[in-house]
Length: 171
Image (cartoon, rainbow, N blue to C red; front, side, top):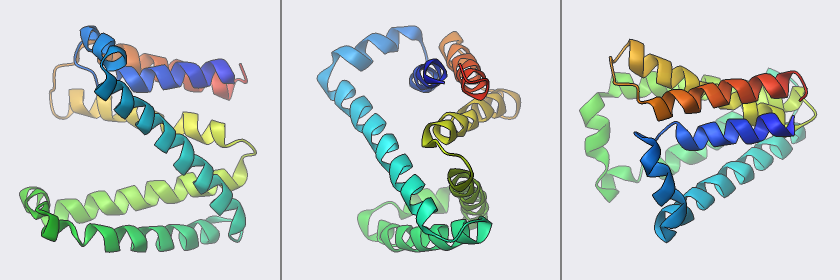
């Protein structure tokens, strides 16, 4: 499972890039490296917090809804400050309907993740499988938005897919 985690993590690093040449500065420029490490640490932290919290609420989807509801209410309170911080134009640009729909899908997906944390023994499995969403986004960008698909993005998506398969088969 560890090799699958490493492979999926490497795919996560590659997926947002536009070309392989961007990989070097990601690790050699202190500012970019700092953000990369900070992001990795944040992912580990919120995954562990979610795992512990999911185990602390009543089992089943009801417990996940309970925790997710509190978490999203807290996030809503923080996001409500966005207009005061000059970010309201982003919400207006996509329209409230689109933002609301995306938020509902995000909430639903997050509830499934919280429920999965209750079902599996190891949080690392859920982490690996969460990354499949990046593969879906890459495919949607290509098929629905007709975006160019650079080789580095395809490689990242394939690495995530292979990593998840290795975790699933216990390798």
